[in-house]
Image 1: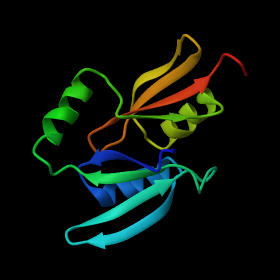
Image 2: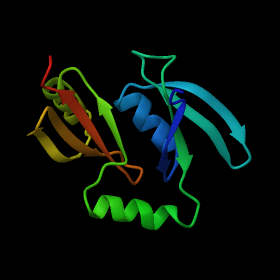
Image 3: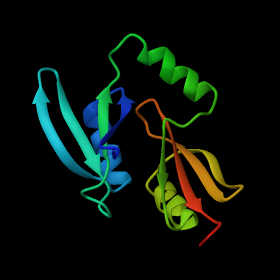
Length: 131
């Protein structure tokens, strides 16, 4: 069994697509119109056959309170692994990405958290142990 698709709820699919591709560097895997929305998945350039991230519309009534609670408690909706957190942090800051947590050591990882502009906090993680 393998993970195929994971979702992140977004307030606006077009805005999310722009942020996740232009700023974070992901690439589109699927963009299939479905009425008012799309089956819109992105993947890492480094692993185009890997797990897809579905940019899922936030319209279900339970999503708003769920997302608000996570953000209010500082809990990321997703976590992305990077090889060099300092370099990625600086690159994203130069692009105007707003961080809620600057690079911080946390046990076997170094992590940072940013706002994806679509209602979510996203965590970046660099493994520091076992490198």
